[in-house]
Length: 299
Ligand SMILES: CC(C)(COP(=O)(O)OP(=O)(O)OC[C@H]1O[C@@H](n2cnc3c(N)ncnc32)[C@H](O)[C@@H]1OP(=O)(O)O)[C@@H](O)C(=O)NCCC(=O)NCCS
Image (cartoon, rainbow, N blue to C red):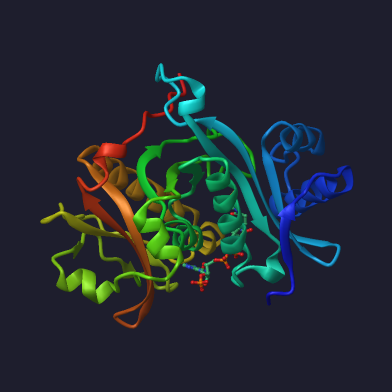
């Protein structure tokens, strides 16, 4: 399905359609970014890119300018990044590459403005988002936030938790260029396993066919480690709340610990392994420490 165009949205009508699409996806008025705010963003250096099929809005991505290192004394003009605040695609078009094309358009815009970094946050338990952000786009993750949006009721909070991983997309870096131009195919799970990586937490399956986290997570033996997550966390949230909470506690503990030890999320693999659909983060030691950016403080 490539019968759509991507372009900046600027008119009141177009921005009202972005508001409506958010309501469709999040179904929570407190989560929606209203058209008043979108107009202000669109007229003041932010951008709202839309994917349009004829007059129908099938997806959008919203971004604004922020500071790469907020505590730094660098002048703002030498410290700019783009913050990607929200992206959504209507359900009928998901998995057809619209999200990917929206992000590529956002990258082109950043490069045109001389910006090298785009950041956004995503729930590290969502395999689909990890595949798009880390594997296809080449973003990396080296900052983990507990309850980024708090733990109260909201569409952004699931089971009283809103943990997020910060995706850092260094848009002019070699790894990103190679990923998106397809010049360097990502490694397969087998290649990682042959290359000294171990699966720290191989899952088992319960009677309902849902993946269960191990209670004996290994420590990494080398500079590469694989951390397994469920392929469909939302299905677990819908049918087994206790298991979903166990997954949150497990992934929070292990990812935080690995990041604190100096590992960064550098790849993601989704595919068949030992007869089941499986999903793994790849964490590398040391590779990205020079671009570790300052952490957000919620205090
Ligand atoms: C996140 C979102 C914007 C992605 O848009 P999209 O158009 O579906 O994205 P794409 O089709 O470009 O890429 C999705 C990829 O994930 C893959 N995928 C689908 N389900 C998956 C799963 N369970 N595990 C891993 N990968 C999965 C798709 O196959 C596709 O990859 P491929 O092109 O290599 O096959 C869309 O799913 C969405 O609107 N979600 C709800 C809102 C949301 O979560 N927004 C992000 C946070 S603000």
